[in-house]
Image 1: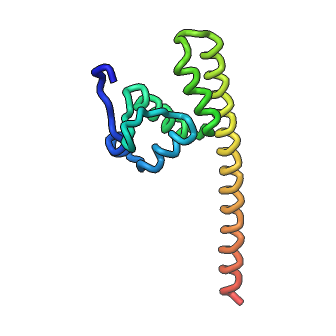
Image 2 (image 1 turned 60 degrees about the horizontal axis):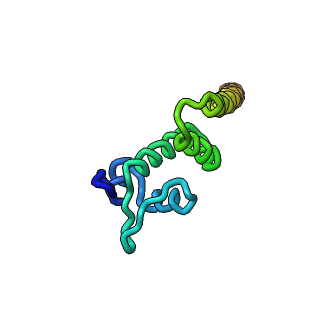
Image 3 (image 1 turned 135 degrees about the vertical axis):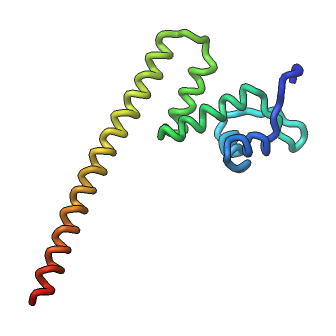
Length: 129
């Protein structure tokens, strides 16, 4: 591979703390494309960066389709304003989704607190009878 550093699947699995199966899954989905030497997969620095971006996207809660869009931006010419605007829009959408989820969680926790208080009150008044 032109003298550049290469990685085996176990190297990347160990580095990123994931299974080789997960890496093969991302390969099957077309998110990474290692070179094959028989049955052995040979990953380039580009594959390593793409895997890092995939895992970052997963951590941020993006779908595989959204991650593919982000990877496509990574592969395109740098500095394109439209690409950066698209990426910013994706981040904004994800932020809004997380804010809504946080609000839902807060409401659920409030409801649990209220129900716990009711149960404690019933236990306390039930002890007096």
